[in-house]
Length: 487
Image (cartoon, rainbow, N blue to C red; front, side):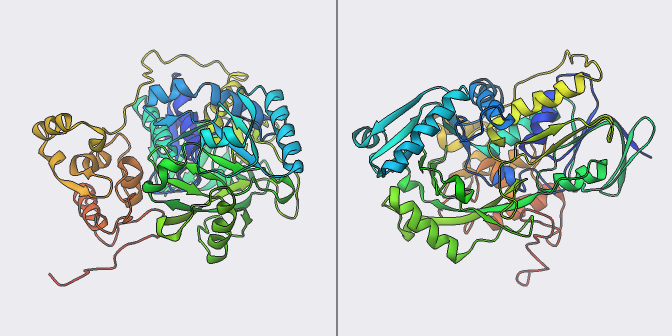
C-alpha cells in the first residue's frame, strides 16, 4: 500500500527541514524522506556555524539576496526555535596594499547586496575587538554572527514534526516515477505517492534531479577540513577572523571561528574530491591549517587541539569547470510538473535556509493556493542545559528528577536526564552522534572517552537496538560486532 501525501521533501538537512517547517504553516500532509538514520548526518552538522552577512556573494544572485534576508530575520527565528546564537561581528584582516583594495571591493559588494554594518578598521581597532588577532587593517562586518547549526536544524525539524510533518529515516530514494496526477517514490522499501515533490537532497541533489526528469546538473563535492580547539582558548577569539579571500583559488582562506559553546574552529580547507561521503581528515591539510591559521592567530598549539573533522560542500562548479554558480531553485513544469528542484545549495545555505523555504512556497503557490494551518505553533524549546543553571536551579532540577543528579558526560557536565530527553525528543536520537548534537555529550576535551559507552548503554536500552545494530552516525558506522568482554 502506498503512503499518501500532498507533498514529499527529499532530504532532512537544514534546507529540507526549513522547507518542512515553513510548509507546515499550511494544510498539507507533508512527508520528509532522509537517507540517513538520524538528523545531522552530513553537511548541516559539518560547517562553520556562521550567520553570514552577504558580502561574499555575487550582487543580484539568489545567494546574495537570500543570505541578507536570512541574516536580517534570524533574531526572530532563533527566538521561536530556541537556537543559541550571537551577533559577534567579524573581521576580515589584511596586510598588503592589494589586500586593502580587495577589502574595499568586498565592502562595496556587501553594501550593494544590502548588508549593513561595514567599517574599515586599523590595527588598534582590531586589537580592541580581538586582542589575539594579527593584521594591519580589516573589514569589520557588524551583522555577522555565530549559531549552533545543530540546534538550528533540530529546531526546524522538530517544529515541523510538531506541526504535523512526518519524517522517515533510513529512507534513501531509489526510484521516482510520474503518473498522470502524482509522483511515486520508492524509498526504504516503501512506496510513497504525492502530488508535489521537493528535491532538497544536498550532495545527492543532482541524482534526484535526474530521477525527476530534470537532467544537466552535476554536484562536485568539495571537502573542507577543520580543527576544533579546547574551550580554554575560547576567550582569546570573541568573533570570527578571516583572511582576505582569494577567489582565484576557489576558497575564502583559513577561518578562525568561535562557536556558541566556547570552542574555536580552524578551517575549512578547500579540496575537490571524488567521494560524496569521504569525510577523511589528512595530515597534509592539518599542517596547512596550522600554518595558515597562525598567520592571523599566532596561538595555535597542538596541545589545544581536541578534534579534527571535515564537511563537504555540494558545489555546482568544479575545479576543472571553474566559474561561479548560483543556487538552483526552480520549477520545470515542462519536464517535472509539481516538483521544486533545489541543486547546489552550499554556503551560505545555513544563513539562507528560511528565505530558500519561502522561495519554494512561492513557486508552489504560483500553481495552487495554500490554505493556512490554524493550529500552526512556531515555538520549539531545546533540552534544558544543566551546566548553565545556577547551583540553586540545579538542586531544584535534581529534586524534581533525580536523573539530573547523574553526570554522564563529565567534560560538558551533561546529565542522564538530558541524554534521556535527547532519546525521547519529538524526533528522537537514534545514533550516538544524534545524542551528541542534541545535548552536547561527547563534545568535550575527551571527545567521548569517558561517556561514549554509557551513552551506548542508554541508547540500546531506550531503542531496543542490539549492540550489533548500534550506529555511531551514518549507515554502516557500526560500533560493535559482539561482546566486548566476557560476561
